[in-house]
Image (tube, rainbow, N blue to C red; front, side):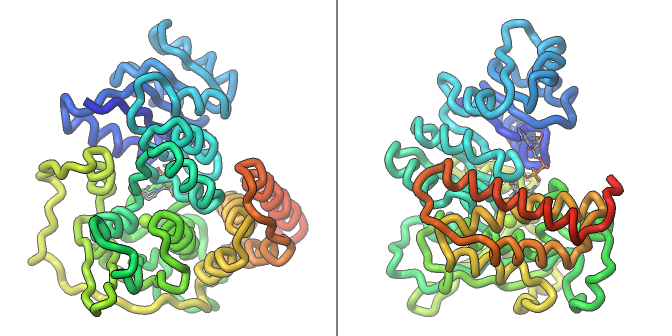
Length: 390
Ligand code: NAD
Ligand code: MG
């Protein structure tokens, strides 16, 4: 029996994780849960249903409200310290890292330092502090198991292969709701349109990131750190059907892909049960129902965020942390009606232009760059954005 802590348990990945847990009775026990401000009642329900004993929320007020709803023996903490308690709680073998944004970094890093295995959905953790996170896992011997569907695909295909056998990693992208739209028609798209993803049901931030292709950019960075492959050997192809979750081209010209339904419970179940594969009847792909699988290059002009992610990798050091922090506030501002869709890329580029990257000597240096970028974007929005309508 594996003992889990789930960070971000009330979100899209968190809920899917708890669904997977209940489908495999006797395999998993949930010791810890953590979530943010929204859906506190849902968190209380999850605590009661799973029997989790260590819980964390964002603020002290929420902690008090939650305490009133759960068994008095449950430890309810808050803030970064509370998250770290959940991530490193006694007896936890595997931490599911599914908080959205850079807020997931510190508890994920703490879990790895303590040698706990991590199933990582929170891609921002690897974008903000990739080399430090990988080094922490190496030193403690903790496993870092990818949950992002593309990285789960690559992980499955690369298993047992030697690095010199790999020529390229090819990440597939659905293209999001605006695939095929030229730059000029993207000027007026709304948050509601950006939130209508054609294939995947996900949290709002990653859904907007999928529409700008920043999500794919973050995934290129994530793949670079997870698999140790140089950025120039990581490519992106738009595959609107979301059936092929990624491909590896080997040096002999052979390409291996992983296929499956577009349901995150697949990669979650793979990470949770790793190294075993276990039956999951609902997740069967009907090949005959497929009307064809297509692959096309991304439109770099309409979706500049992908190029900005490669640029940040080239600048290295703190640049990816700036990309990530700037993007988080830009997306929040877009969802609040203060930035247009095209201004997301514009302000992230402005932040990269204004930043002088320094080496990532510590987590603190990474977090400082993230905070600097957030402040930069807030100031930019105040000057160039629309009035606050949220
Ligand atoms: P979501 O918005 O649905 O859920 C986010 C969760 O994090 C919620 O439980 C929320 O309460 C919690 N949270 C937010 N801020 C917090 C804070 N400061 N402290 C504690 N908890 C906090 O997001 P999601 O779609 O589940 O995505 C989670 C992560 O997984 C993201 O990094 C995303 O990029 C990644 N991911 C998601 C999917 C997907 O299908 N949803 C796929 C691949 C990767
Ligand atoms: Mg993905």
